[in-house]
Image 1 (cartoon, rainbow, N blue to C red):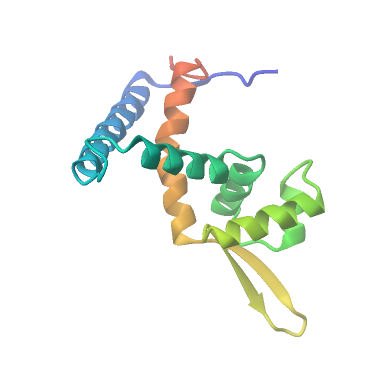
Image 2 (cartoon, rainbow, N blue to C red):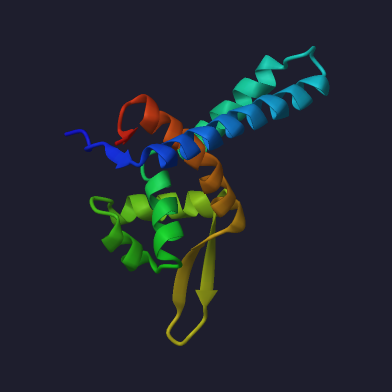
Length: 151
């Protein structure tokens, strides 16, 4: 069942839309700067496609965004705390995803030798930054699909 729309005051939605538009403008500028330095003409399609596939590999797989969002909102958590916060995830999947997110430097695995040994998972600065970069995309998608509107 689709989620009900989030209704915002008109000025708040306009502010969100302005910031999304600024992000689009910044992205256009960054792409233009990169194109000027491309070795294969003005647009290195192969490089751009590979970069997009890499990003989708990290952020497009099930549970990645949920884990990163949970760590952002709830702060550092131990494995079982995360498992309890993420309804429906298996221990194996959570373990695999955390290992992957640590390898991608999005999450820090902090071990306190104890006793007892304690392992916390913490969102890295890189993870925080990536989350902030994803926020405008999420807002744009929500506006386009009608789940974010003004009253």
